Image 1 (cartoon, one colour):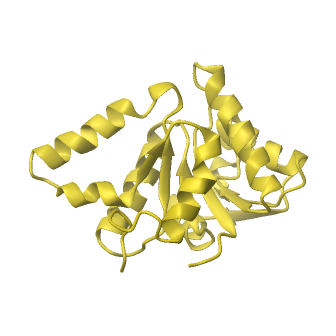
Image 2 (image 1 turned 90 degrees about the vertical axis):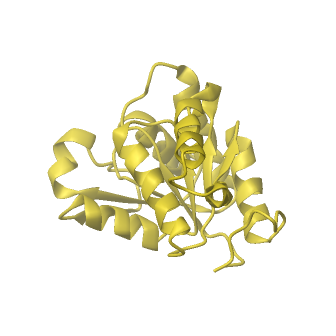
Length: 194
């Protein structure tokens, strides 16, 4: 993978309790559009998810949303995006998002976001992919999650090499440089090679 064409963004279907979360989604969306990178996301027009997708569309970028049919009344599919894929199950949703993406960016979110990031880290650890995974630690949102991952490693349930499967940044403007550095082997000692 030498060319970055699409980024999957995992994030909350709610806005959270800090305006910085929504603003980060908007700014990331604008950046993706400006760079000509397609957004792949959960399809909803609500929360950080909606803010990110709408920012991409407003800036002239392309968006693919993937949403299970049973969530249409909860996450309210966006009518502004270029492509909306309806799936029967959450498993199909996550698989489609994975297949259409060159990298993953994780913004603040809830249990669904946690499930998504754990899954792609787990798949990387199992050598099922070597796609970049970047967590945006907006106002230290991901600190408890990162502490849990450290706890799992410290207690012997995962090796320290688990850390090579994800990167942590503090701001939306660090996402694409971090992904590109990973893809281009700029941090070779950390970058998984399968």
